[in-house]
Image (cartoon, rainbow, N blue to C red):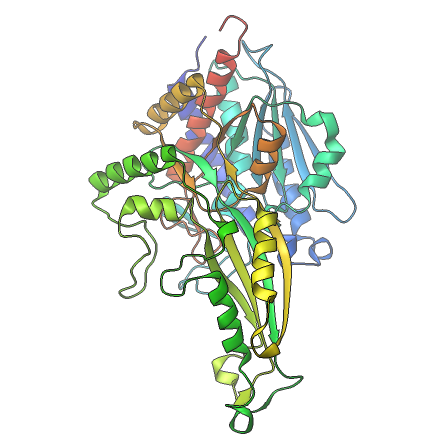
Length: 482
């Protein structure tokens, strides 16, 4: 018996309105920032509250055979492990692994009046607040999709759902949990991840690649203490100027292109063709010529065409200074030649670059022959490689098309994503034969990590239906008679 999509859609509308949206709002209220941003996360108890909220919600779902286990390790953030046995006509189907995370980015300044990171606000189909879209909805949507399959005549193979609590810290705690799980992780044939983005809210978007990330702390010291700028200016070199010179070793300041060979790759022809086709379709439908971001004034993007911008955000390396120390606020600044400038650098590297090799190359470039003999200290705080999708199996290609048509009335499309999901790289290396569906609700304006983050609830409901369709298709493809 095939999945009744009409019944599934009706059920999901009710589950989202009645059960998910109020609980998602409660989750937004919890300031459970990732451990990299809250060293005392365990003492503060916010992560524990979030885990408990999601686990209690899951245990109340009418899903046959569902078990919910909280995994704890000393000094590590917890992991939720949820298992559902095969259902319907799928007794011999291989395992499906579903993934999400519940930790959050810091609050960030700049929220508009009436909005804030820890107070959910509903405006139309948008629910504002930190973590709703990245990635608090993932557990709710995954289990709702399973519930819809079971209640609407569908089938699914055995499911393992992992929800971690350190993804925004580079999944620093996840490897220890995976080691503790051992063979219990199984050998998934399909991985479904709900932590990615969408170029528009009109269809299912499937991520074909993720960039890696390298986090570097750069510190330049020129004095042991600050001195009067009138006395020292012109004699003592500026720590900021030296930091700027060092950054020029990494990046062309005029173009934004990175200079380090270890950070660049040739873009696969398939991805170039894909970006061009996607750009042509989007431009035809929306009239846009740029990837949507909240540009200020007359700011122009890098890349003269939409296709070039899509590739720059997915296959080009990039650098951003995401934090600084040694610089007082302008209201507090005196006429002092400062002793120190420290910068936190976030480098995104192409999907196929080894992040550790890239980190070594960056550190070598920054520390070689310091200008004026200044004390330069470089600390690599994180290096996570990206991920590139294996070829899509014909059955999955057809299932994605059908799922998008069922949920959105439009064909699915593929995209490269600029962010990093460390677990996908881990899984790709561990299970090279697995198929991947990486998707999510981070569409235009959703602004994960920044102010005014929101989840588009209408899009999320449709995405949940698409996931239900995919789970059913996977079970039917993998039946012995298929």
